[in-house]
Figure 1 (cartoon, one colour):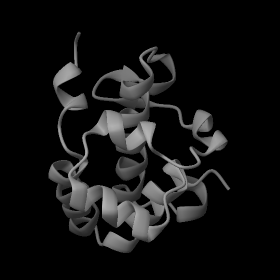
Figure 2: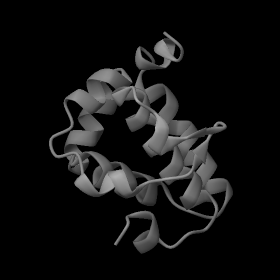
Figure 3: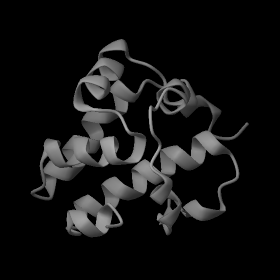
Figure 4: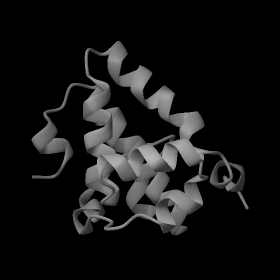
Length: 116
């Protein structure tokens, strides 16, 4: 299965890259956390616990307490693939997160990133 290896990658191993990408563009770790909480429904303690447990992406999204229904409004291209065209649920969730972090790094306002 293409991309299967990323499912077994811990979110904690990728998370610093999200933060670094955002901070290089003048954004903050707190904004990355806000995006993740918006997408998944984790509170900050829950997000921190998942990172500490080093869960993989599949587990991270499967255990998400309240996946935001507005995440289906996330569209666009990540890694050359339109996120709205991804059929595999875990990969689509991963690309939703990638897309939101990309938008943050490009300087979009949080209200627009969070589809408010």
